[in-house]
Amino acid sequence: MRRIFGFLSLAVLGLGIYLKVAYDVPDSQETLNFFVSGFLMIIGGAGLLINLLWKPAGVAPKDKE
Amino acid sequence: MNKRVMVVGCLTLVALVALGLYSFGPWIQGRQPSQSIPATVGLPVSVKPTLEPAASADDTPVLAGYHNRDMTENYYSVKVPQQWQVQTGKSHGSYSFSFAGGSGTVELMDVPDNSTLTLYVLSQEEPRLKKTLAEYQRLDYRKIEVDGNEAHQLVFDSRTDAGVTRTVRTYIAGQDRAAVVTVAVALDAFAGAQAAFSAVLASFRWENR
Image (tube, rainbow over all chains, first blue to last red; front, side, top):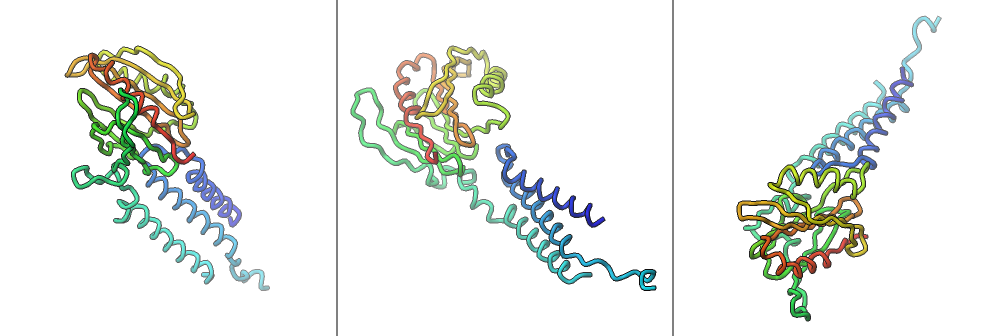
């Protein structure tokens, strides 16, 4: 689950960077592109960071025994 | 929940709000100066001409220079005869001008990355002109150079309310966008205006090469 979340975050971050750097923005859509690419990069970056910082949940009662 | 994760979540929310405000907030107008300033209020910097010294040749008009800084990758300058009336155009980074018997524009045009200027002019622009202009008739198409840049020039006649108009439309390749210099004049006045048209085109410069 954690690995899937990490891959998704990476994909979102990659899409944001693509829109920011490589996408040919149509005339008069620069503001929207700025917002969407920024949004995706922030979400993707935060997702990756959360993925790295997340501590595994406490040990399950079954394992305690 | 993990404290550090909560901190990251909060910072993310703050960043998103800041991004939204920066993108669509009230100060956005400050980043797009020329579109919102009407010509009657006062000319923006890009429409204040820098005067050129008087021309030496008899038929060469005295030119006034305009420096456009609307698009970061497409700063340009162009000079037009002093008598012509110049205003900021409808689109970002453009000028429109009028003179006795004719009018014109200098504008920036987005050429898709998957196309070339030649292909775009012939496959998109000319068909569009044919559709939108009455009695469009191409007189000439040629590849030229403007200040060392690849350029394509279309010369055509079309019918307007005032009669037949001859238009010279020049597409100049640029770093991000292409520039389109258009001058249109009544057919009978075309010969007399050609020197001015050539001077305008020859004065065009990309400024951030």
